[in-house]
Image 1 (tube, rainbow, N blue to C red):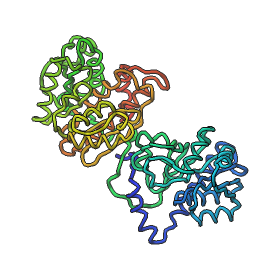
Image 2: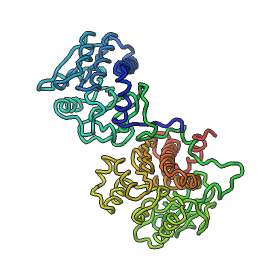
Image 3: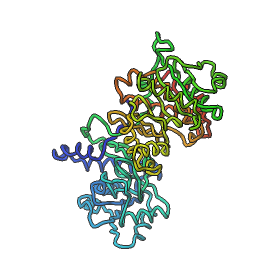
Image 4: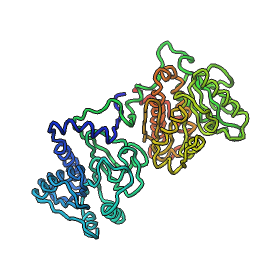
Length: 497
């Protein structure tokens, strides 16, 4: 995978910085210079010129505050009117001295935040250096929290965050309190997981990475696939391929009450390019009418998709799901376990079974296994709970949401934000399930060789699903069937065909 975005935790970044700092490498100077360059670029874009702009630096006591103060000093030398607002008794003294030597002004907040709030309100841009990479997502507190809340109440200015938006969970994206959302985040050394993970990922705005030459661990904490990575993961047929080597997907979905789920799931599998789709259920006539290439009945299968549109009182479909689970457990066939099949999940499966719950469904899976958690808790810390579900079930977990989170074997973790908000529509999950089933069917042998590949394929499915939604009707409403219909063209584009 060539274009993937990789993140490392705050502890990993600190450990990678230590030998450079011990060797006297001026990391803060490098970071501050890059921060001032990005900030000047924004000012030029927004005002046409850098000189004459007004910038307020919100400086906390740590190194992020030092970065912001040093950057402020460089901006002041370029004719920017720079004010530093200090919200605590401690400050990075060298950074503060540099700013003052360059002509920057300093306001220490002692009591009322009104003056500081007014100062921020009159700025062209705010540099947020209040908290650093030690932030745990509990939000800004004390004077800093009071000031930021007052600023937000008046209307947030344009904000450039130093490393991470203050108050955001650096390693998990949590935002349990006041957070100063950014329009641009300039992050140093490595991307941090909280910049990609929900619910905080949208707090970062556009993210720019400044390379500091860190020697980082080989295994990243959280990954986001980019469109250029799809070609490395998609099972493209060779010249000697036939339908069985391409993969066969078995689908147990829908009912007379929910016929559309069967049609959408099989449609996505067909249009994702799998070798064959088999359908098991009571609406085979409807499925074949929509897609005559679908085969109704039992037979050879490499991967299953079961659960879409299956209600708790559908005894026939539940028996078929039980039959499919036996094959998953005994013969190693891959599976996408969705919707009505999630409550039928055996105690343990392997990573070749991919669960596709939303937050409420994941909470129910966890509660059934003794965890004290609800939907709100899952939404507040989705990677933690997706990983916990993987630990308890053995399955790869794709947690659906505005940002899709995947947790799998060998610590694999992905966060995909590829879909438009329009994709939150009925049937979209059925399309994702069928698409993922096609991917697994074409790659099941490789998944057994490398169980972490199931998570990468799940993230790939989320990426393609989102891109197909954009393609179906750019910038406007879409239907689930339109997304399925857009799959062939989307896949061809991503493969460069």
